[in-house]
Image 1: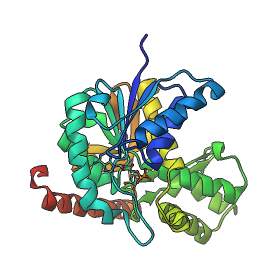
Image 2: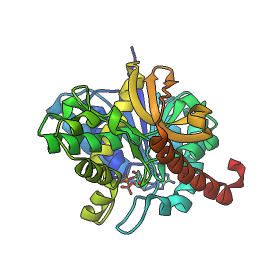
Image 3: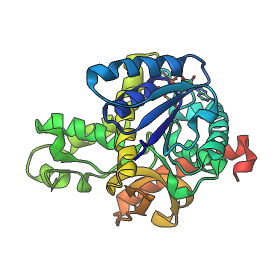
Image 4: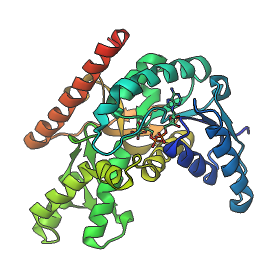
Length: 320
Ligand code: APR
């Protein structure tokens, strides 16, 4: 059987890390694409030269022409600009929307059957625009945010409790940004909800609130440390988990920015919700009951995503 083909559109810090991880996991042949000529070719060659050492058989190529992504099974989009200190994800909207228009056209022409994972920020608005620009089915275009946000939450919780990250699950809803909604009663240590752990004296409510806030600010904390760009190892690992779920039809239950058609009271928007990812793309959206406080926080998050989509329509009226 021929290998799968994975197109990485954008070969910067996340793109290069994606290529490395996809190679190590032998997910398929990899095409790195970027407008900066030489970068995708150079990174592709460098990673390919690690393959005899690591022992993986995958073709890695770099290109600056969209025809190279032809027939891709998965496209992971990181093209655009990343944040610098002092910038919010929303500050990237003008530049990155134009990039999504070009990327959408390229995918529409050369990889219309692909499963598309968008990482470019501001995520919920960019994935919404990318789906419209590309015209691909809505269940085949998703945004990566929830896996990363919940990974950050899981790490901080595991460190707090001094337990394995493997035994901590986390549940995060809403947009990728300051309004994301980590749900304590659905986040657990080996099945024990955080709300119970508060009662058991493992953590105080106040400390838990601090951890939740650190999770919301997880991206900004790294931007502040790096100073020259934003996080890339954990975002890349998160998107690879989603790609693997699709390629191997694993039916993973993963939080993703998915197109909603009335679930949670939201229509024609991408917002972070629990989904099932398998060979059909987003095969199911899981709708849970939210209590009053959770619903308020979720609605606030949705309103901020809606504001970004409106701003996009202001720049590109064809998105309406
Ligand atoms: N087409 C293709 N590639 C492009 C385009 C375009 N129109 N415009 C920019 N790029 C490329 C850049 O040349 C660069 O190599 O996108 C790449 C982005 O890489 P980085 O600047 O290193 O950014 P990275 O850290 O990878 O983040 C990418 O993901 O998490 C988000 O906020 C982050 O929006 C940012 C994106």
